[in-house]
Length: 435
Image (cartoon, rainbow, N blue to C red; front, side, top):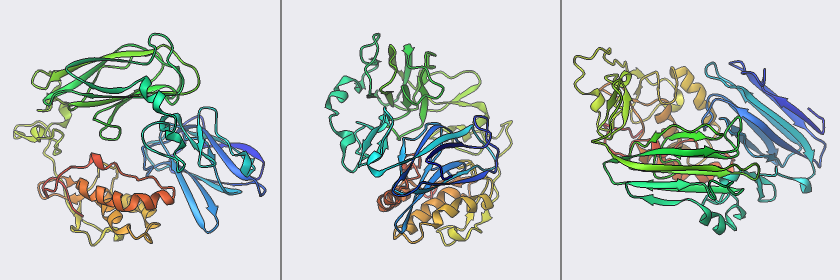
């Protein structure tokens, strides 16, 4: 495409894109103009690190190729490239899909780099979404995203403790202010879980919750646990229950439409008093599991109670056949046997794992490639356990690789692809592996 501006989208958009697609658009604008790309909608199988379906933008800066990859349901901020040529690739695998993407590009002079009205521009051309502004983590080299944040931080959020509490959007029930990032950190006594219940709820109505929304995390910080849900519009969220004694509630508002907001109450519930439905099983932590997870060969309760006393189970016993690792990149680990399917990464066999691991081969020249290789192989081809099932890598393996590699990946515009907090925090070879 050589116009000064145009639009493009995934096949069949706004309908679902077909499986096994691979589309490449080459965008060229006349120098000294640069390519600016805005992705107006995104619904691509995720989440990060975008291993199955993805939208990727590549630009050539001097002798270096810079890749930026997107997936999920939240459109990224405006992308101001530093090149007059950009390669955009859309890829889908053979399974789960989505409605794809719609994007626009235009030619801009270096001095005309811009961001949309709700985005912040820093570093002379980098755009940030509102959720990344004043979040306590500098995302810009010039750190302007964390400047002038004291007033915003005082408006809402904070620490909440005790057996019962209340939280609400600023000014509720009057309209909340624009450009907010509020975080409530809720903690209760050990041996209790948190039940959060919304009493009023009215945020900006939108098809995808990306402008104004409430997001609830199961844990003491963002990224420490699974996301219990993201909510917007006027439909009340369901009552939400944490798996432990910590929960984090995030409220984001952009510069656009404001509504009356929300209020919610929370209370601590003793795991001894927490009851599950008749068709559910209760772990000692209070977490309720569906009956289908009982005696399936996987420890879904932290203490493995769901896999005990399974002799009379109506569920078939779990059988796992170990197989020799044949993927060349993952040979020479501390173990040489794995097992499929890999339920954590949704990988059916070694051939599919090898295909997904190819993207890491481009990093072979990095000095930290070896710890990254061991971690990636441990995730994609996990160790087959003699007790049945497979072992994830220990959290220390992930943390060590992240510490050694994350800065180098940042320089290549790769975000760190693994959440180390989701891995077992243990060194016990029965619980996790050291590839």
